[in-house]
Amino acid sequence: MPLSTDPITGRRVSDNAISSLYGSRHAGTHTPSQTRPGKLSDDLTLGFARAGYPLLTSGASFPALIEVYPHPALIELAKANRRLPYKHAKSRKYWPGASLIDRRHKLLSVWAGIVSLLDCRIEGVASALPLPDPSSRGHELKAYEDCLDAVVCAWVGTCFLDGSATAYGDDTSAIWVPTAGT
Image (tube, rainbow, N blue to C red; front, side, top):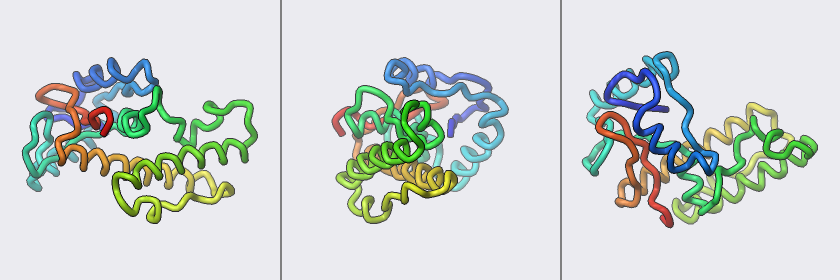
């Protein structure tokens, strides 16, 4: 979710910074707007600030709210050259010649690799996120993918806490990415 201390009306410095660093690796950001994420982002940022978690765009003061974008984080986690093919809805695009069941198996293989890498950094991830069955319905696969994204964001939070994440942005917004090799 794009976050900012100012209302978001278009591309932010943080979006441009991430796209500059990770765009060639197929992990540039989408362009946010007044309507997406719009008021939801504003309300979320304000609500967290009122609860004592201001949006942090630099430094390390606690407690804080930080913005994370899973794709660059996964690139760093996996030491990958490009964005990992882990989005269920894009499996046909990733493996266009493969049958549905083959695409599912390939997707589950990517997920297994992500879970294994996360389990090396957060003990218990593998037991908490058993892979879904290849015959799972689409919404079940999407729910699992969302869980993966949540754990990736939690991992980035741990990197932030131990000082091994970098903020890309300005005073109004920043996207935090684990330092290479973390």
